[in-house]
Image 1: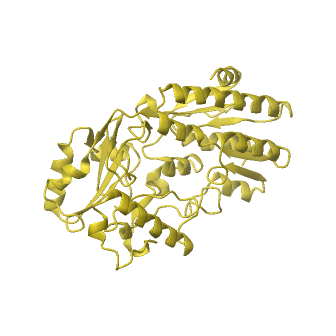
Image 2: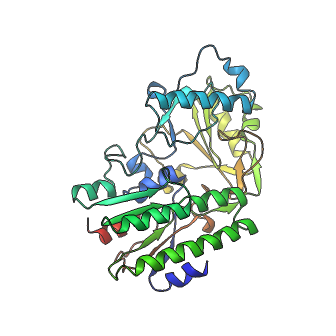
Image 3: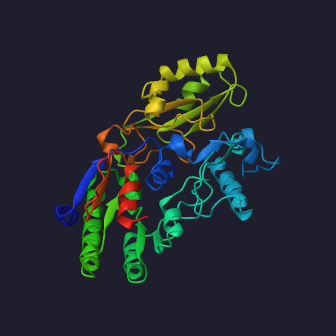
Length: 366
């Protein structure tokens, strides 16, 4: 990416650690300066049967449908659509493929989008501060606008109309998942994006020297080189779903809730002996800032090794894997985020993505 490389030579650029989890946890941390254990938002879904927005008709034979990933997917579409019609799910929420016997156990960890007022259930965000200080801003990009070119065109128009513009470009993330980051397809598209963004930056810098630019990512990406079939391993242990435990299988992280000590011990033994990942220790849970006050995000956490994804997971429709993924150990260099600013950040600690909040707050004087 030569255009961005040259642009970054004239400002502050740093690779910084991300957090364990996915964008749903990392973005709230970036825009609040708080860790997941502090703001209590981590997985997209949390255990909360009493507030679950999902309803599955009693006429649908759950046990039969759950045996087919494709059949389950089409029922999931109906369940999600129904919840959105009832105003219980935001329209931009992506469809999962959860087992019907488990879907009613879960609720969203975050019902509003990050830019909305009080989106983090009491934790103050950068957007809340800007409203308090009456700093006008506009937001373009995911999930309402698609395509890098369209998003940048919208951002350029808004720059002339307001003080602050946020543009969220998600195309690179999708391309990394689809092609893998070491493929010719991905690198060709990255080069095209570099040219597009380079032209955009050149144009807006002509507006005036007072223009402040900050570019950052919420995570990195790594190629997928294998899978871990946790479901089969646990099924062979004799443990019974809903009676002994409840799982939530993400792409790189599996969470479990257990209902008795015997089930917990057997599940721990199974997970500890499943090659391709590891059961997180109590010390690691604290280290990764996911030591929540309740167990709504799980009792046990299994993290796949970098390069391995959990398959099948609650995203799987047809067996097969994406080419690139993130959400692994945040200590691994491939998972790191980055930040660039053409302003002096004057922030001494930029150790991880939560510090982006303080840099932006200083830049915006809020």
